[in-house]
Amino acid sequence: MLKISKLNNAIRVTAVIAVSALTACNTTQPSVETQVNANISFEQVSKDVTYLASNELQGRGNFSKDINTAANYIAERFKAIGLTSQSGSANDIQSFLQEYRIKTVTPEKLNVTLNENSIPSDKLAIASSNDEINWQNDKTINIHSIGEDDDMRSSLQEINHQGGNHIVLVNTAHEKMFKRYQAYFNRGITKLETSEKQSGELTGGSIILVLSNNKNLKKFTVQASNTVNKTVLKNVVGVLPGKSKADEIVLYSAHYDHLGMQGDSEIFNGADDDASGTSAIINLAEHFSKTHANERTVMFAAFSAEEIGGFGSKYFSKQLNPDTITAMVNIEMIGKPSKFGAGTVWMTGMDRSSLGEQLNNALASTDNNTLKVHNDPYPKQNLFYRSDNATLARLGVPAHSFSSTQLDKDEHYHQTSDDINSVDLSSMHQVIKTLAIATTPLVEGKITPSRIDPNLVKNKGRIY
Image 1 (tube, rainbow, N blue to C red):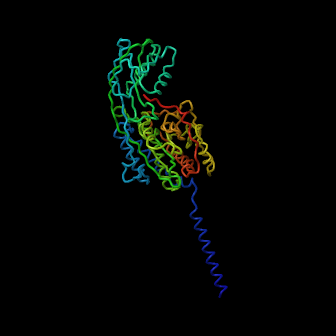
Image 2 (cartoon, rainbow, N blue to C red; image 1 turned 90 degrees about the vertical axis):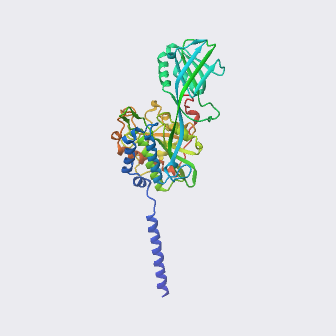
Image 3 (cartoon, one colour; image 1 turned 120 degrees about the horizontal axis):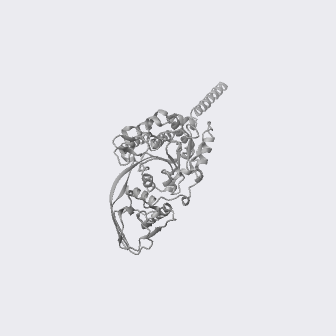
């Protein structure tokens, strides 16, 4: 009886071990590719981009009611996914909306005298962030002269980067270029409304252009008044709190604004630019919320005002310490196949941090090792500076844009034809899945890219 009892016990132990082993096998974590395929559906991606690019939203123009409708849709998706707001709340969609204010300063009246001679209005131009100007031989005003052989564009860029107040005498040899600046300035200067100073430096000012060959300026007066319009815009920000590395942030971003309407019937839907990227961050949020594998905090930001100067990302960057952002994956125009083939993606500024190399190492270790993040094939277009990533890169964040557009062949860019019918949904879906796979080690805290040297990133102008 003792021997039989021992045998029965042995059988029971063996059975328990077998069941435990079977249970362990059944709870084995599926591969990253399997999870991505299960969580990022073609149907949901198509639904999101189709709605955001629909005529119902009339192009999501920054100063329209329709952009608020788009913001609410994104916020509703974030809430349904289970994200929280930056404040930790998720009670209603309003908690996901990050409001900020911009002001547009448009010239109304400008009178200038040089050496007591009144200057005709057709020889004057003004770019200003101030409501009014009243200068009279003020020694704090910087006086510049752009000569016949000088580069007017470069000279004005340098002055713009300085900030402060300036009178610029422009030689008549540059009359054609002067007229371009005059027309540009007359449309008004839009700035983020803030009373702060960045690192103690001036953030605004005025530039008065005078088309004149006069180089000997002894006396001057400038009187100007401007019309100021202030507007409230909104970013949409959702957060997936991290675990062991909760104080480190991985940021996925896209801009959801576009050009809106022109006239009563022309709608610039912006399907590729950038309803595609906005749909990507929504579906990436849904994916990572289901995997529960984010050791780092993951933040998803849909910016407004990208099309009019990147003010949404600029405001966002002031609301948190940029040193806490491990990397920024900014998704910009992925609605059409790239020159490398359908479903492929490229990134800007790959040489500025190690992020691209690390993402490609992650892709190389997958079952489908043909996936790759390509280098920006259009270096002459300066694309690194043409989206919201540049704002964070100026603060040292490894911030890059990811795209698939063929800029040299894209006939739909900023055209009414950039609608849902011009989007290759299958290619777009694959790009999103590739980015999800590539960035998983980033979210899991297994890789950390090198920082961008902010000293090597060109600053934006402080006046216009």
